[in-house]
Image 1 (tube, rainbow, N blue to C red):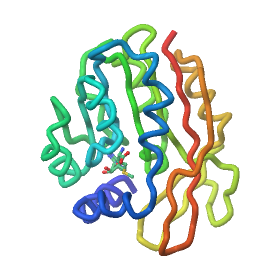
Image 2 (image 1 turned 180 degrees about the horizontal axis):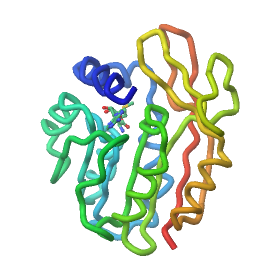
Image 3 (image 1 turned 90 degrees about the horizontal axis):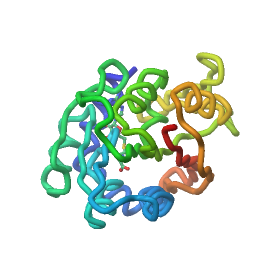
Image 4 (image 1 turned 30 degrees about the horizontal axis):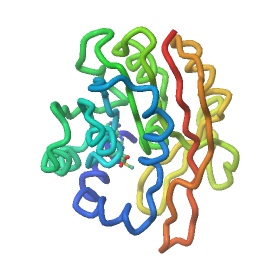
Length: 215
Ligand SMILES: C[S@@+](CC[C@H](N)C(=O)[O-])C[C@H]1O[C@@H](n2cnc3c(N)ncnc32)[C@H](O)[C@@H]1O
């Protein structure tokens, strides 16, 4: 599965920024607002699944230092052309560790990525490893309120192969909370919101955003 989602991201990279503008991708601003007041000036931020850099851009404009990882070479090329990240690395989040030393970042963000990845255990543990003590982890995921059209593939995890070939995953909010707890995080805020509207399919997509802190 992971390879095919990355392959599709490569094919979609040229269109990505146009498409999110058209489909009202509100999620980057929502994530930024959730955390901005708590950040020290010039914080070190890792964006997991940075894509073209849309979610990192508000943090860059606020003066923070951005590092990004993504599985798609083409998405990373688009991101590089915006000059917002100090370091960009291509990795597959389902199979590889984060190429950073322990306790390096003040904040890890991941927006619109975890619904493309399964399982999440290893990446949550890696994020906990690279964060400084009392660092923040702010992310979104698709929660399992409505699993119609999805198959249950593991306890608390559902999968759907969409008509475009993208595999998407939904997770129980309780399962995500447990993963956070098991990796040393305390939840600070949580909200569910309209993340984007696919105008062609006439479908609304809701994400849940969580802000948590490493204790
Ligand atoms: C919907 S885009 C979100 C991009 C960005 N975070 C944003 O807010 O616009 C999803 C990103 O996840 C990346 N991705 C999906 N599966 C991945 C995997 N297994 N490993 C690494 N990156 C992956 C894709 O390449 C793509 O850039």
